[in-house]
Image 1: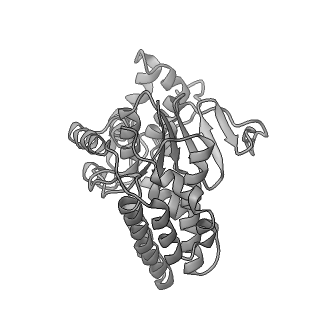
Image 2: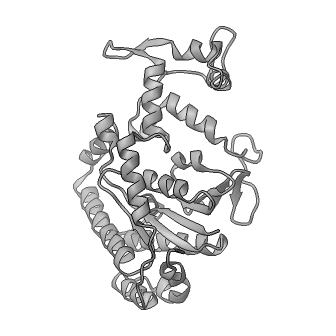
Image 3: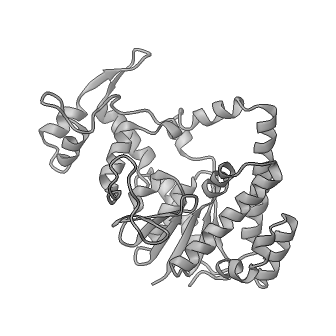
Length: 328
């Protein structure tokens, strides 16, 4: 039984960009440092055996659902010239980091033009059901994968999410700011159901039932009641799913139709058959050990190029997860 560190690479790198102030060189250096440090920390904390970096492609979801992530381009179009220059610089350095882990380390690096990192991470977990997995990401989409053998580590907040709850670095439970009580353990199935019903504004996935309440009232079924009735498809389920509503363009929607669309978009086990075939093939072809030598020396050279002295001073420790081969 092995333990894999699965890195949502772009998420980790670009989230780090927003936690430090300064010029572009300072931000880039910190993004590289936080990414490598998150891997090093997870490697040691969870006694891992191999690191898998997962990268973004264009995404099949944009062909399946035209509005998908269209808001991202709108946001990019609104960048000031200074922000656009910084964005370009970050992507250029991210590509250099990608090339480094691909060509100079023994880490597995997966990318496909039609797949997102979320797909690749889920595909790896599903292909290794008897192993343990630690997903490095701040993305809430991975809550659906949390289970006794899969946890999520937020390297920015230093919080680990397990099937038993949310935990700080020292093992203490994370306290919910609203309730002042320990944050309850995630309920992956319900969280996925709620996401499919409410949509995802960050990915521009529209709600299947705008304004739906989590808990119902005397006269109206809520998400909790519909979810509890999901297995039997009884009154509460049908009462919600057969509702109809009209959008701002005057188009009528049936809740069930939009819910099923969102399941395909959001459920990381529900990709269309042709996408699933590609995903399975990509994961399988990467289940082979690489044979890169002198990884520590290669890391030192990378650190020198980007002035990462703190990493270079502990090169042996940072290189340990980068030189570990896939356990064939």
